[in-house]
Image 1 (cartoon, each protein chain N blue to C red):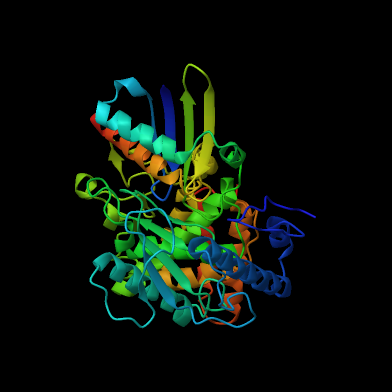
Image 2 (cartoon, each protein chain N blue to C red):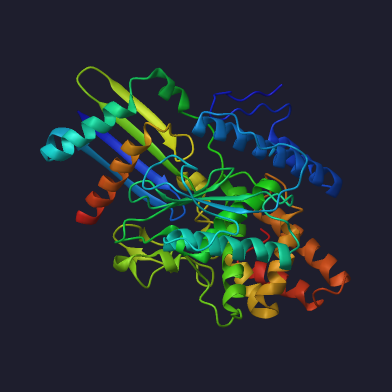
Length: 105
Length: 353
């Protein structure tokens, strides 16, 4: 599975992004990511309706998540204010992974 | 009828979209009417959230005409992402054992009291709306935001960023987004969005100077210096004195803020540069403050803030600030030299175009 992720904006106006083949991740991280994706229920058609939803307030991060596997490609757009509760732990994980990758470059 | 998606989480049905109302709100009577309408909307939304969070209908009358007491409520998310889960300290409570909870409580009190005592504004909505602050949000969450109803603060990762609630200018910044929402409702996009960010930086830094009893000359004019972790110590997120010089590091790259219209950012990133182009009016505010004092500059900006409209651009902002300054000159609250000072400061950053 191929993942492309970006987290942009926020109070600090960060620009974090990475793309990765999940098989390249250490097994423990790969498992954790799979579990978080399962919890996020990304196959729920409700999530695709959030794309383009107007974010309330100010300083929220904007997230873009593209997932490609052998069967299909899925694209999601969220902000801190529009992301459903079940997706937020996944976004936390991916954002922290993005920081880790960027700092290791 | 304009109707947004009415999910359980965010039910908002408006006969006329907010931004149109805000553009119409260019006289004081209409502005006041709209502010009250917005206040009711937020109070209703808070009740809806309460329902969502606790699974019970909130029995408070937050949606009524009654004015609030701008009471503080600090909630501990305990690393989760649900808001208003565990109330850790409310108005009048003794100190908590958690220093982050105490900072959020104390600093939001400083900001609330500044708006009330110095600028005579009763909380975010001028109707005494309670202040809701959620701390310890998420897992190493490197952000703070205003969600349209309440404030959210992450702990940072402890390496690059420390806790976002431990900073007075960050709390002042976020709370001011609420005030902007209830006054001009500046759209969070392009130049109006950069003005929205600018006003939050202005009052974040002004309230910090007021609290520390610093003059414009003594202050560092930095935003976010207190939340930089050990790796980025000595840097900040923005410099109002010298936009574009606050940081240069591996994670964030180099500070992109311009200090003049000739370097205006025209890209799509960051809602077309809301945190980037705010550097231009930020520099103008700094220059004015150095001449007439931050307190007088903030008074002028606060009066201008209430006459802005949702889609105001930089040129319109300059005119509105000058008009606000002239009113204060006429009433004897600022000296007449302020007008020339403001014109010169905006000219120094290339405004008006």
